[in-house]
Image 1 (cartoon, rainbow, N blue to C red):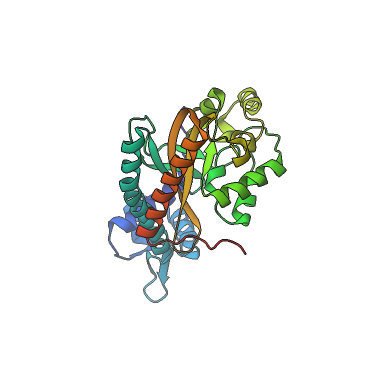
Image 2: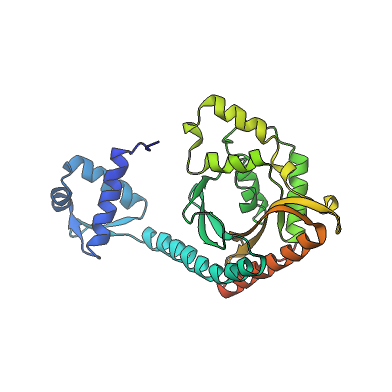
Length: 295
């Protein structure tokens, strides 16, 4: 499927790209419209909106435009995201070698969950993205604030879901206390991620959305709680996940270790501890800090 492109949005990107390429030079309306082959009214509308948002600034004396401070903040966020993913790769490679499995680092970028790093023998593609909306994305708010969790849960779901909210909040509380998540996905659940990868909910035919909704009845049902796990009993595990934190103490990334088979409760505990140790190392190396536990 070829995604539809928005001509008005393309023109906005064209303006921003031009200013970036000019490395700080400033331009007046007429000159900019001529350089970009835009109608002056169209160009003025774009410049006005970008200036209002702080992405451009207008000099009232020379009537010229240049890059604005909002881009500095955006650039810092992007730089931090790429920097922390490089730090994460070091820890992921250690885990992948020890457990001979695929390990990834991923984060929410805009409205998408994006894979930033992938190590080991698997096929998880760096740059793969998923829409950040139920049923996808629970682990990206598990260790964030209650407000962030509620905001995600209230997003329109990509497929029809019947939620057991009480169970889901129990999952959140336990995963925050334990420090990692243990997820068990059926084959149908795994196919869900492939189906939704890079696809907006509105692009799914209604009959497909209803079918997928039948495969994933409740987000909390595919998470193992501590009371479910027995040290000597084998439990089917798809993956383990643990959070990293930024300088503000909020969750900013998820490290994932894929399992894809049944392992004992004792082995789950061992791997979970190793994953948390790796995530804590990434947090410390990137200048982040773990939030203080509630009193």
